[in-house]
Figure 1 (spheres, rainbow, N blue to C red):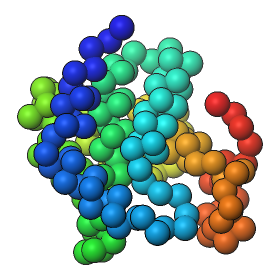
Figure 2 (figure 1 turned 90 degrees about the vertical axis):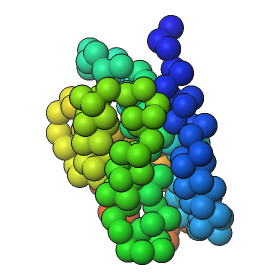
Figure 3 (figure 1 turned 180 degrees about the horizontal axis):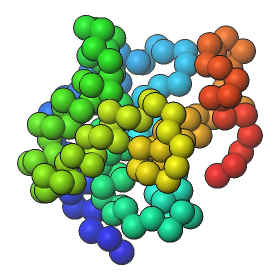
Figure 4 (figure 1 turned 120 degrees about the horizontal axis):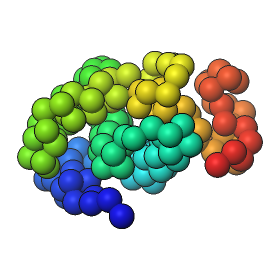
Length: 161
């Protein structure tokens, strides 16, 4: 079993908790997909499954670290119009060094956060996270699906994982 203590440090980091609290408050009445810890963990678990299936050797705590942080800047998008991937990366830059991630690992995670909204082919962490981010959404069971403006090709309309 891989050591996940660095992921726990991200979760318990005061700055992470501050941004998470603000995000959860901002999205409390959101009708569409919410950006909650459940979403972050769904993205982490799916990305990890995809990496295993592809035979990639990406550390579990790298994947989980990236997933926990990938949407944490959404409140800055709502409040200040900053694209959430940029806000999330800026927050991650402050948190990751204090959680024991090496410079190269931080760069890898930041790249994944900044790229998680760009459709990428291939078996990179960026491509796997993009796919997991979309597949984590339960469009097939969403009561607001008919009102959702996501293009059909992004919607997760069947159970696959």
